[in-house]
Amino acid sequence: MSEDPRRQVPRTDVLLADPRLAEASRTLGRTLVKSVVADAQQQARAGTIAADQVADYAVAALPSSAASLRPVINATGVVVHTNLGRAPLSQAAVDAMVTAAGATDVEFDLETGRRARRGRGALAALAAAVPTAGGVHVVNNNAAALLLTAMTLAPGKEIVVSRGELIEIGDGFRLPELMQSTGARFREVGTTNRTHLRDYTDAIGADTGFVLKVHPSNYLLSGFTSAVGVSELTGLGVPLVVDIGSGLLRPHPLLPDEPDATTMLRDGADLVTASGDKLLGGPQAGLLFGTAELVERLRRHPAARALRVDKLTLAALEATLTGPPPPVVEALEVDVASLRERAKRLAAQLPGAEAADCVAAVGGGGAPGVELPSAAVSLPESCAAPLRMGDPAVVGRLENGRCLLDLRTVRPGDDDALVRAVRACMS
Ligand SMILES: *Cc1c(COP(=O)(O)O)cnc(C)c1O
Image (tube, rainbow, N blue to C red; front, side, top):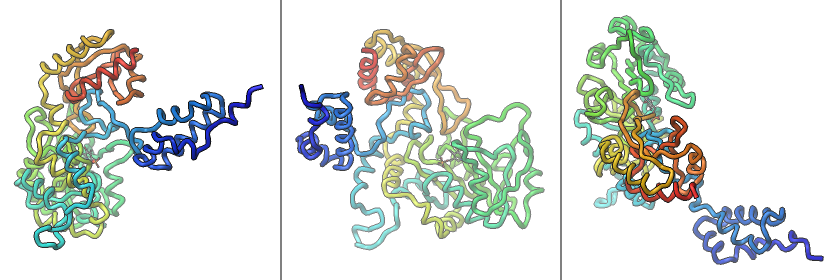
């Protein structure tokens, strides 16, 4: 009678001494490798794998990095995809982050050996990108920028805002609730579809902290509507704060309805807030542009310290601003003829695939309703799940019973990996 296979399961110390697992312990950490080994031993005890396969099974199950986040090829055609981490960074930004990951002179002047202004390179790049700003500041995200603004300009006071601009930004977060959590109150003016200048002027008084304009970045108001422009809201005796959302610093010809920081300041905004990881194409950050006096007040608020960004963000932001166009900008500006050519070339390498025209979108980052002509590799719908679970994961878009891999959001350098991923899931 043969021995019970469960008794022959190799011991943990024996498995960890396997050169492949020992090496993994050095790169991934012993705790992680031990948990993978424990799972493999469990499989052997359950009889799912043979005792002499435990080491091989564990090696195959090792993750490629110590963090659980995995690389994804965004083939959704949504340029700024919230669930896929918004803007993918440029190589220049990634390199800058790697450099800053070690000890770095983020708050130190190497020439004098003294303390220096934190993130001065990133701040100088922001100021250069928006010359109409008297001051610039960076916080954790746009929500933090609005929070700091409310805390500084409207403690115990009112924020005057149009009813058509009370927005929910996703995952159940609402800007009014966020700003009211500081103790500021909202004074809603106008109606959902129409707000006039007199609605604002009637509401402004001794209790007003500031007037807020919010760009409806994830919905469109159309039909019988009217809103008051930024230039009409200046000179009312209270600060005018404009949340532009998407982070365009200058007007973009392809996005004529998307507000930008330079124009808003020129039109008379005292403070502009924006995200760093939407159309700007950089790291998650909240960007603040405004008069030197207001920005300095925000910077000096005690809570500013709790909202500050880390050195990796500062490094990536500076490189995004000074380096080559980031992937978001490339995806926005690429011409459809080159996308069609790529779609044809890739489809020709993949049995069962076709090249197809489709329509991409800007996405969670802004420009609602803007349609970007695009081209895709069209696959049977059944490919979607295996592609998502492949390595690298590929996330496409389901449309009319097909799985579309929209090439507008796939970086050309990823085309070969895309072909390999599709082949792997079709075989
Ligand atoms: C996206 C968005 C926000 C939230 O920005 P985060 O950087 O995600 O905090 C706020 N306001 C508007 C108009 C937005 O579009």
